Length: 366
Image (cartoon, rainbow, N blue to C red; front, top):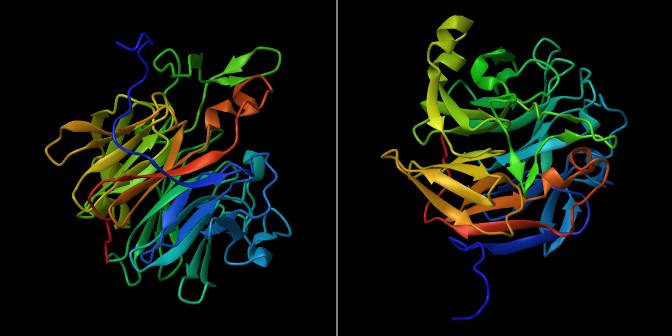
């Protein structure tokens, strides 16, 4: 008997990959050859570059500092404020640019999807979104790919806006054409009090002004993942404990109207937690981050659940990426930002990139 009180027991194993002492990261992705990329949206930190690569323990601008030096919030040729980076099944890096520093209204040229050829580290494609797709209120959050659909593949993006319509954006990578699906569908919307009360570190997770007034978190469709067979697209509002899936066939079929697409939505049940990120592996398992309890859980192919990792160091697991038998995840203390703590920035550096072994590989639909 040690005489010490019991503490939060850890499950699984977390390995520190990198410590961040500067701007707060959100997204992480790992190339087929093991290169690690991260992104830093412009939410108030001093962001020297919005996309970086971790090389020899250092964060460096990627693919160049010039590409990260935007000339306006609607710069169509440079990166403005990237929320997500994802390596696709063909080993290309895609940067999802919100065009929305500090969640400001977007203008055409800002919101975009940028492809970088990792053999040359050069931009090879930039897809701009028309204003009927990337609305002034749109906040592009995360993206997944199926390269088997269409001439060059298809991308699926969540619009998590806390100020306007939510939904899924579908992109034809060959033509650059894009369209909205599940626009304002209930499954894409944040759950509001009193139906949802989020608590992190013993404090209610709400926006909290310096005068003490509060307002609920309103982030809609946020996490996104595609099933190992490419048949279902999973998604969830950040403010909510349920998650949903929709037929990928329906999303990409332009002949189907909104009601027909909505008819394929499936309520996947209660995740038991608030999730900022979703991911899948090639063993058919689906991962959900648990920001309230410093954990990541996964649903197995038979429908049962287990905890992949639980650790008090996992302070707000944000984005996940599967590579070479590991699940990578950023922990960025998002809920300690000043907007949630009455004007006091209570984040404590360093932020962390972790990984945990999962004995599976990424879903590569090509």
